[in-house]
Image 1 (cartoon, one colour):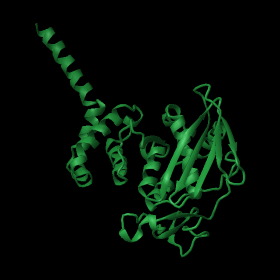
Image 2 (tube, one colour; image 1 turned 120 degrees about the vertical axis):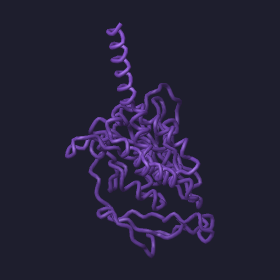
Image 3 (cartoon, helix red, strand yellow; image 1 turned 90 degrees about the vertical axis):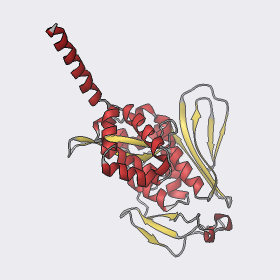
Image 4 (cartoon, one colour; image 1 turned 135 degrees about the vertical axis):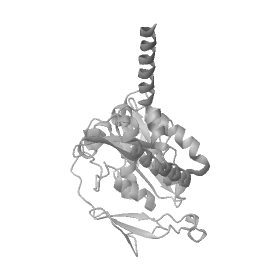
Length: 305
């Protein structure tokens, strides 16, 4: 009788330990501290419940992310809140990617935008009429006008394998730009510039098409797009953001450009209605120092180009 009771107690202890070590328990423990509760209340208000549910799902479905400090994961996820984007994995707006820090000998979570997140931020700016990033499949043919840079996709899809990726936008005043990358160009670029790809991150293994579309779109925006300060800051902080002019030969050496031009996000102000051609305070980004500075004039007239 005593032996049976002892075995039951041992099994119960094991179950309690298992529950205590479960991802949901670990995350809830991090969320329930006084400081974290205040942080969540201040940042989320009535959206706290949905955020916590998505965060627990995100944390529980990624075994590598679970090796990161749970509190650090929460703080990275809150960066999505500052951009008014959901962390729901099904939406694909943002990613929390675990990187192994060799110096600290541990995994560290890092916030990154997905290509859908870039599209969301661009459309909210009120500058773009349309913006897209897509896949070209086997059987489809791509023609590029070298003069205008525009891409024409024709033919019928004959399979599910991607052969390339495109990004396109058109602003309200009619300016449009497009880029096309072959799959090989995306891989060569990622091998050279993306830490997540170089380290064999699951984000590339499991979501190659999404990351490839993001690469094409981000490159297009960084060279030709009108961007808010929020978007510029995100470009600068991502691990595989590069400052260079890929041109049409994305696989070659990227020569550093001294400046990329962006637009401060002032579209909420009635004085800066984008439909009137006023795109807000013009900023200059020095890609070598990462600093923003006021710029009195652009190399083109934003109302005419």
